[in-house]
Length: 332
Image 1 (tube, rainbow, N blue to C red):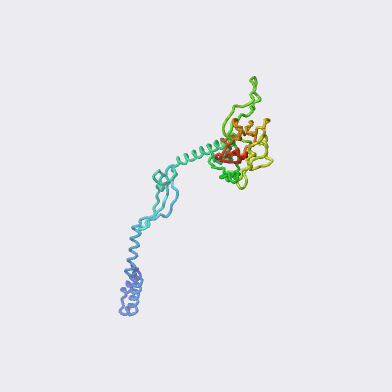
Image 2: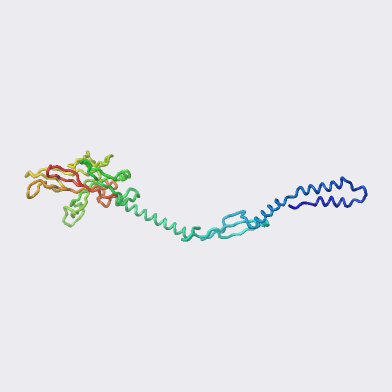
């Protein structure tokens, strides 16, 4: 560390200017010597000087330090920054501007370009329009409630437990507001409903269709808290009305009767089916196919409910007539 000798030089200059013999005294000489000792006491050791020199060398090696950083010029592809720096060795201050973050590519992360934002906004708008159209179509088809796209993906099944039907996998569907429908594998021919046609011979029935046809309405089947399936006790002609009651008995789905000639039979749609074999005249085994599916609640008469409306799979079961005991029971 350098010693400030300016004040000591001034004292020595005054001392050398003394002319008289008696002007030099032990006190004046001692004063000069004491000043020299005091200055030497303020001088650093060689170790201190070495540390200071090493620190200065580190500053020189570091070069510049950033003292301020701000957003630079506007650009469509890059992010620019304005920065202020100071030279750690000389203390010189400088300012500059340049690319701070380059645009992103498929190989590296970076800034999103303006065109990418435009493309992203256009894509989001297109997706929103498609979702609106899809929701309208789904609501018209009765496929979903709101915009919940299940698309027949909910898998349900029906099992026979102690003679009654149990359904599995329907809890979430019920919680979401969907209701069960009962279908029969039948050949169906509805009455013709066009009463406005003119100059043509009126039709009595529509063209027949064979497949899974709706039995009754949304009021025809109920699911209990224990997943037990029960059926409306209303007559078949009143299945579109709110049920007077529900039953788990298999005979709820058929109406046993006797023909004028004494032949036991049951109602199946608009037909009467004999329980006897046409040749042997003995009771025969009969198997009727049913299935359960879930869809949006559609009140009777509003629109035709088909399997295309379902948001679940069809859970099939059978109604079987046992000729040995002359009874009906559920089966698979």
